[in-house]
Amino acid sequence: MKTLSQIAFDFAVDTAQPLQPTAPAANDELPVNVGVRIKALKPSTVEPVKEVEVAVKLAKVKEQAKNKIKSTRGRKSIKQTEAEADLINIPEDEELFKKQYYSIGEVAEMFRVNHSLLRYWENEFDVIQPRKNRKGDRHFRPVDIKNLHLIYHLLRQRKYTIEGAKDFLKKNKKAEERFMAIQKLQQVKGFLLELKANL
Image (cartoon, rainbow, N blue to C red; front, side):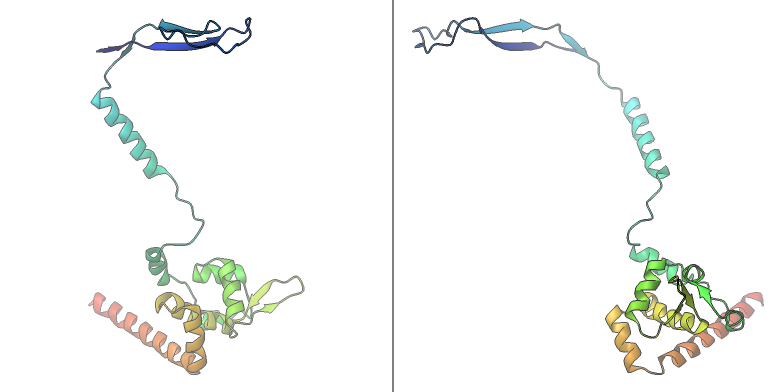
């Protein structure tokens, strides 16, 4: 156990006497109107912190950090975007074309993106032209959803930039047909893999 003593200095000015410039004395004394008081405080005792207590506190902090809910605001990480790129939930063509219009909320759920991103893509790409009512609500046709799927594929899966995707769509007029063929082939591949797994 260590004991530490403390000393406090108190510089007090005597305001009863006016300050007058005085020359210091030969023995370096302070002027009469400035006083210094030194008082010793009670010695304090510092107990050593046990290693067990530190370990317990550290474990509590780590547990709180694990239980802390991460914010969903801001940009997603690249790993999270890549993981979500294959999780889109667009219905088959037969089911998709049963409805004439889809709200922006339904489309955002299909692609697992924010509404603002869909509005941004609508401004950037001319192929997406949802109908708007008097209120300003967007209603996406199945054709718009197909075009959104192509744009999503270019931006999220093939990692094109916005400008690169625009150039790709301008230069490749048959890009939609190719994309549809690729999707059909992927469906056939999935079906064959499923058959193989069941054998």
